Length: 231
Image 1 (cartoon, rainbow, N blue to C red):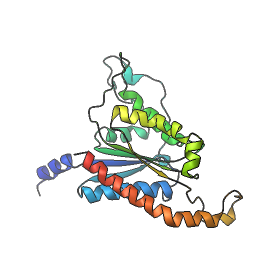
Image 2: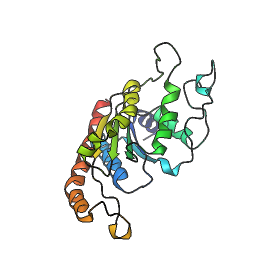
Image 3: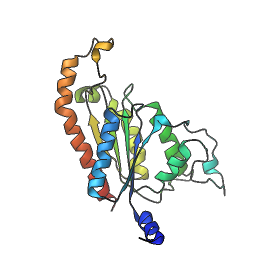
Image 4: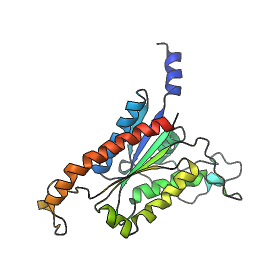
């Protein structure tokens, strides 16, 4: 294969990115995100699939510099802050699909993912009547949520309202996200090492053995669907 042919193939290659908003790189959220990428590879074997761990990066939320809004500015429509998130945001501008994952802390996503969303969304928004956006590519998206509660508790306590705020922006800018909730997650490798009276390790383990494999299958299917929707 010549260099030119190789370059053309790379340019045409689909790209899917998994944004890991969990501090853990090999637990529930990360595992499900990896399953999404596996599903994407099954549907499109040549896809470039990459997981990005936000807790490995040094960055802040939006700094309100408004460089992305400056008239005739070099950074109009994109974030100008040169920290570890800069290259990630550049990658996503050329993505064919993106999946976001987060454990749920205090009924909503982690602070790292929240800060990421600020930097990701705001440059696309124009301060014009009707707030049109600058998105050129309406890519398919998905959101993976892992949480310590069961579905009835999630619905009763308003978790969906908090999570839905970010999903609204994803739908407005891109496509309506596919959603996966992973409930009653197993938090510790050894519950005996922690003060944790409100949970039964046996009940948690039994739930995990039945339901987490099902969640992995659902995540895999999401990866396949994202690739189909990206065509």
